[in-house]
Amino acid sequence: MKPGEARFRAALQRWRRPGPRLPQLTPAQWFRLAILVLGLLATVLGIEGEVLRGLVEVLLNE
Image (cartoon, rainbow, N blue to C red; front, side):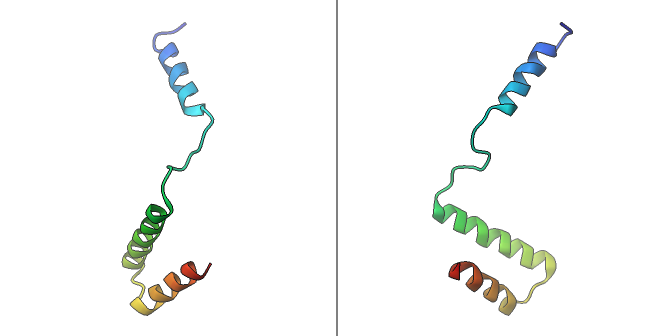
């Protein structure tokens, strides 16, 4: 076995381990994350407040 190969194989096994890929967040935390992402997207794209408000309403109605 080459030097470092055992370490590489162990890291690969940890990476491949089955399980949820998304972090375990509460619905309130997901909501806050969605608002944060929308805010950042609006800032980057220069979306007006009225359009952003419409997007939030669409998200809340689903």
